[in-house]
Amino acid sequence: MPTLEWIGKDKVVNHHLDVPYRVLDRIYSYDEAGQHTEDNGSENMIIHGDNLEALKALLPRYEGRIKCIYIDPPYNTGNEGWVYNDNVNDPRIKAWLNKVVGKEGEDLSRHDKWLCMMYPRLKLLQRLLADDGVIFISIDDNEQANLRMLCNEVFGKQNFIAQIVWQKRTSPDARKRISNGHEYILVYAKMLNNLEDILNLIEIDYSDADKYKNPDHDPKGPWVSVDFTAQGFRPNQMYEIRTPSGRTIVPPEGRCWKNLKEVFDQYYAEGRLWFGSDGNGVPRQKNYLSEKGGKTVWTWWTNEEVGHTQEATQQLAVILQKKVFDYPKPVRLIQRIIQMTSAPDSIILDSFAGSATTAHAVLNMNKADGGNRRFILVEMMDYSDSITAERVKRVIKGYSSADDVEETVYDAELTISNLKNGAALLDEAKQAAKDAKGKYDKVGKPKIIDGHLRVIGTYKSTEEIEGTGGSFSYYELGEPLMHGDVLNEDVGVEKIREYVYFTETKNRLPDPHPDEPYFMGVHVNSAYYFYYERDSVTTLNRAFLHSVKTKADAYVIYADLCMLSEAELEQYHITFKKIPRDITKL
Image 1: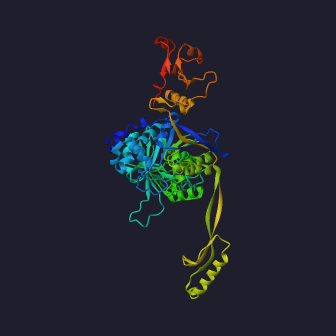
Image 2: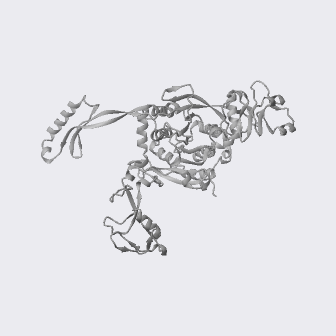
Image 3: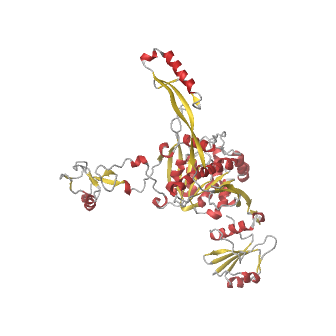
């Protein structure tokens, strides 16, 4: 398979293995009661910090569990004027490149830098995906070709599902000879076997439902018809059909009937065939709205279906009471992605969270169907609390939406006869505008609109948007678990235990056992112990064995030292692991 090469690739191919594992420090929690320091137990997370390190920090709890990943990484346009720095010349990225790639990084092109930044992040995202999980990645023409090759390498070309084209604008930019009106969304599976097992049908919308009619008052409800003929010649599908009117017909030239005679007879008996209003036409098969579980999607997503950037910009400005981003993604776009890929209890991850559109979409969908989808957002920029988390707070709690409402204060059609008195008409319109002041927030000057002389008054109409409910906790990246080969005791023993138990079992650490402080849990008939004290050396010896109360077929015991013989370890089915040497590095 062809592979993509770039300067610095050899330095980042395995860099995800060298990324330090850092603990996550919860700063506050938020729910309908507001913000508080107490942990509310929410499984929704917003993490502030470098997403490379944040993704590594998620592995102990979420490796192989994420059903849907959506990311909107920097497009590498070279535009550095936005709040969201859409360029890999961000000082933090440059510092990372200098550290990982070294002096060679000084010679990298803009595209080399972008690829170096993306590769290890995609490697960690691939590990977090569930076996039936799907990742969606937004991109434009600046890096689309490179990203496609990169994803083929990380996820496997065989796991490519589609490249979606999203119509992001509502009209072309008149300042340009060719106006870019679309972006791409690359779609890859973790393990693509049967597409029906990993992608859902989407809901039928009103425009689709309107296509279903019931001209014959069928008790099964509205239907649409499809051709009951097929191209080609199949002898067992060339039978005669008698229509309800009594006419005998055969398939049109060059075609045969769609199904065998016994299938036709069954459909006819069930009333699933339409012969026209006079019962004399070529049969068509009825497909009922009531039996349609949803609809498939194609790779062209219009702005009417899933929204556009102008809609998203306006909605975000309303929520935050200020304009912050020029081109966020619309909530409807992310809702379609989640609907296609997740169940009501799935976990959705967005590691380039920006303005938190993904969290907004998850909360909307949970409110609509009572689901328990969970979101994990990661944002490295300093606005992660003031914009990313703030939007989620307002969506949970509810917010006010103020729209400009226009009313016509004065309206006179311009005809040949009244144009003779144009000056009087204009004076009349000006007087109407003067009289309207104070009744509206703004009154415009008289203007000619569609052949009418009009004065428009505008006022603000405020609508209260009901909150979705829900909760989240806000985290910062904390200390690394290890300083080189030395255990970082400042992170606390409980977080060390969580990490060790996950690396052994791929499961979450159970609640502490009151009678066995060093016991972690039982997995596949093996009991796990982490015998650790910050201020003293621990030794696996006979005295410690006498303190073990949990019965299991085998034991994995971590300690600083071991005084048991090989024969004793074998006798009691014990695997000794030395702290910190034998602690696995993710």
